[in-house]
Length: 224
Image 1 (cartoon, rainbow, N blue to C red):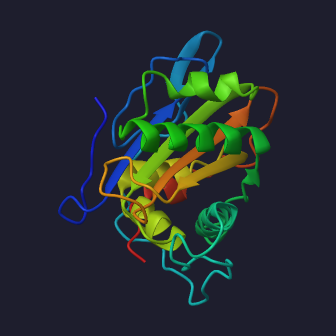
Image 2 (cartoon, helix red, strand yellow):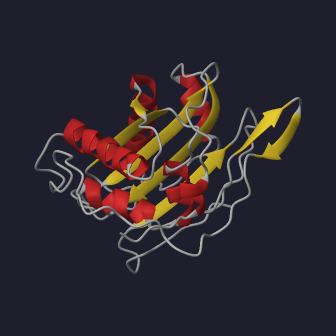
Image 3 (cartoon, rainbow, N blue to C red):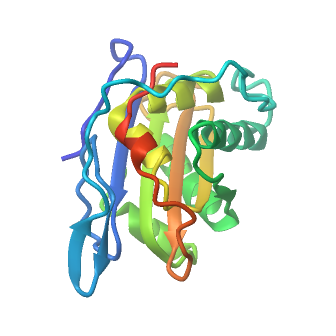
């Protein structure tokens, strides 16, 4: 069951999903713990636990162009670049490697964003991983966040970081690639200039994880 979060009385929506290894029937819950398959067995990469203290945010602000630009006032690609820049800031300030923008994941995320807005359906669909495979990305781990109703890239990323499952997807250390899709329309209706986002994250089948530091993800959510 996919968990739905409404942080502002129904004005916005968030959903998250995470899937591990080559298991296609993902556990679609708000808080998802990445795991991996080895020797035909699944085991947790690290137990998830809430830390007693949040990691202190540094005083500097991310210099992400168009992070606070209102949707509709800058091109779609600018919003997508700002989204990726902001999530990389969230990672690097907690000691995690940056994610590389992937043309294939961007295509997957944009296609799904377009579909949600066109069909007025705020959902991950039956199998989000099949969409990633369909664009030619050969993955071993993948995750997806979606959001609706935010007017800036900064607002969408901030909301994800304040939600446990979305935050954990962003701070999953083993991911290496990311793609962001955006449309200024709403998957929930209500006209344009509301904003719908899809974020696809993955580790390629033949890639090696650059980090196994799960501590930042264990501290989710972050309210900074």
